[in-house]
Length: 467
Image (cartoon, rainbow, N blue to C red; front, side, top):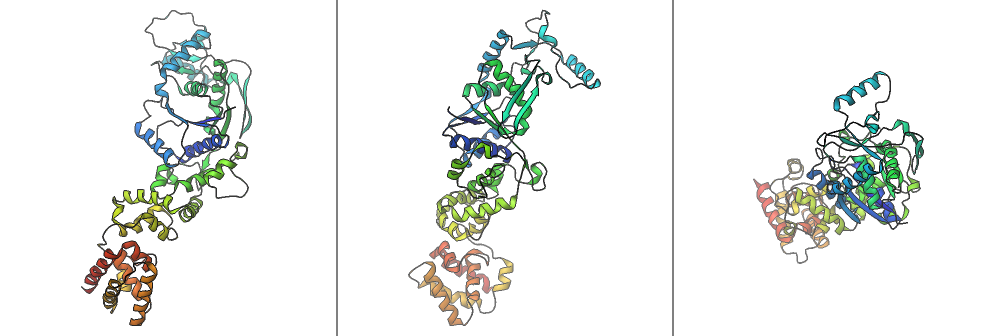
């Protein structure tokens, strides 16, 4: 059997952490089984679905490298297929037209609640023989079984049963002719050959209705796997108030996709005590039976730790591609005017925790330094500092080899000549190079700035600190 999974978000908002984890688990299981992963946009809610939300979901999936084998399919482009199926159901007697007015349904609901009954449609139109005019509005309802149970074995939650008597004849087509969510999902899964449905446990109550629909259509019922919720740092359900819950917000905050994927895979799945997983390892090791039943707690500090790990251990070229994105975001649009971003990554990976922070610190290598940190100037620019800078300028002008070691050696000899520690040489030069008193080794910093620009910045600093 070819395993096929799907990720089917509703584009009513951005892709958040819970959805990203669902997408990852679905993607991993398909890859683990050498199956196929389907991308589907469930946009039948026309009032709430938006193109910006669709774009954000696609962008998030692409950034996470969760590529799909089929799709993206859009439900709004499949209405002809849904109408075809509904017409056949009406013909087969597994669905029927309901002409009940809004007023009748509201009155029925009020009476049921007054009597302590669960509100549900009473099947009034199932055996209705009243003649209706062609232009009279109606909805189409699914004829749900009245007796017995609908049961399924959830991979995570185990055996689950619902009494059919608890399920009413729910609407599968609205009065405006548009199909409803529960109906479209079933037809899509059937047509697309979905074998495993991996989704959040907020869909558990939809499952019995959908199973009855699969059976009514003669479609195979997929295996269900409902994931427990994700809790915030404070133990409550993850929400916007916990900070960055949109996937692209994590990118904007400076996290690597590899770090976020590694973090997400551990929210409800484990392989022994292992914490760090490459994507290749995730694919090799991921199985549905290792998913936990209990809710997972989001821990921002752990994500930060993973991000720092990947900034230091991924190939510099990989990290540099994300760094360029962050540099562009802060207005550095021409990285050709500065050092190779890979060199910046190698210099700053151990010194920063996020790419956003790295980009801010690296800005000085691509743009002119126009200001100097006041606290740094107060601490390090003393009597004699300008003379040291002037000597450094002449020393460095005569240097043939513009590399870190020769620069460091020349400046150490300069410090010896002036009978001062390296701090009194290196720190004024750091201020000249970056505008701050914090950077990698002074030789490495000057290499990143570049020879001509470095000498020019020393001249400018001499003028500024002499005033």
